[in-house]
Length: 426
Image 1 (cartoon, one colour):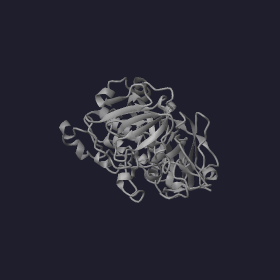
Image 2: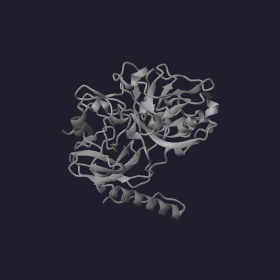
Image 3: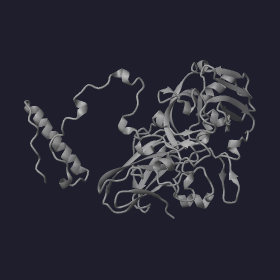
Image 4: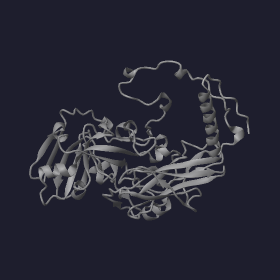
């Protein structure tokens, strides 16, 4: 084992002892992580860095905070060829660089159907009409006067993973799974607003519509509207960002993201669904016999390993912590299993608190990698007993011509050099 160099001289012997203990702790940590002693860094303290030798900028330098310059590559990204143009496209959240279950507002994935409108909150109105007793037109000032609630929920585009139905195509965690994000939403229960207008007994459906150029709209069954839907004006403690529906959006927990209408301007109650463009020609699941499944709102249980992944490879043999995220529209995650041999053997991962209903859940599992090829997978079981399927199981039931609701097990192939690749197992 290399000889430790003498701690830097100091006039205070207590400081010298602390330096020595700190170096010893660092070496002990290196050994615990599997770093070979011959590869340990020199034990002498580092030189005084330049940022510790001067006074930095003051508080007025950044009136609105921003990430460190070294984190400049942690951004949303899009696939230029995925749609006809950016006004009807998607940006993917960088799951590989996020920690915990909350997605920062500036990294929350985007989905537009006619670009991002610039809405004046003072002129914005929410109209509630149709099969109601007292139709209302509400201003933003009216809405924020109602009793507020805050809830943590994920939103996932049903096309998340859609490019993987036929084969592994994009060697990327961000592009394969980045159409999901999770936030704390603050607003008013939709049931509170419907109580205010009075729902007629024949009402069974609601049509919710946005103020974007497409007037994006979807049909929702009334029972869901009265259950846990939120009309929100804040996200993670601040007003909604324009790309997330400022000044007002709907959040439909556990259901596909396109029903959580952004820039919400109208709610109409009726006795039957509206069968809009987005629930006939779009957002339906093409089956092997040529028919389509409609109104498949629910997000089934899904999980993915976020480290290691193609963007975050391994640096050599040793002890690592496999990390990932799991979620389900059915409620809470009950268990996550992890396999390092392509599903032959499974180990139960640790679930990190909080484990919330219809929210992302973090899981981890210690893993000592021996430098040999590995196939990493995660499999979630939710509180209803639903088990995340393999891609082969999904194809057997639904074919391979679909775009939506691919919640299959993701397989990462780890090669001897530590690189990670997106693969599918037959």
